[in-house]
Length: 262
Figure 1 (tube, helix red, strand yellow):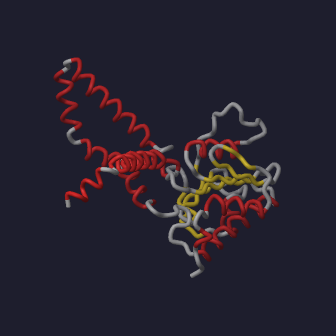
Figure 2 (cartoon, one colour):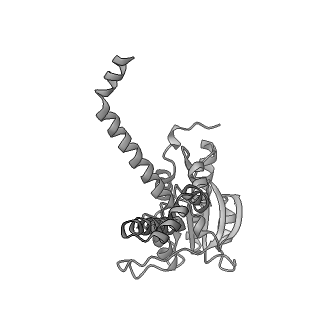
Figure 3 (cartoon, one colour):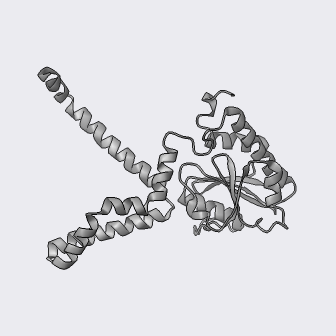
């Protein structure tokens, strides 16, 4: 037994490296999950409280230090309460593809086909549309205003949502886990001064959202009939059916090639 322990000690540097890597990876994944949500502001608030706590200890502000000490003694419970939605989302997303979770390859193909069909149909008819597809970072904070849909992805339904006389045609349609979740959602507009002046509200909203989260946004221009995909604040324009399918598969099906039809 002693020989085994001595042997492992020789590789202690490797274990330390692995330890640091795992901690860094966990922190990175947590930051990715809360990016673009109110959890960021909450986390900043906790950091401020912690700074005041340390400062009160160093400067001898005993009453303030006592109050914060009692508060921070229950910090685990506070974190669970404040970040319960983010913790729930993290557990759901662990080891899963958020967009195509629990879908077979055949169902994935059907969803992709209906989505592309709807975009091409609306482009041909010059119907403006903004469709947002959730990936790893949750979009809960952007869904408060929208109307709940909870339906399968269907070309005709998507088109009807964005018809000019539809009361929710001006907002964004959000897709979560391969289903139409909510429509009529309002998204933050990008404040980037370098954005082309030719971009309308839908394009600016798509860029603004994807600057904050890792979602994929599809924009159909009612003026030009062109289809664009926006990821990470960057826009790819003038996509036809084939190009749109290729881009969406690359962004949404990282494991699709490994699945078999059920």
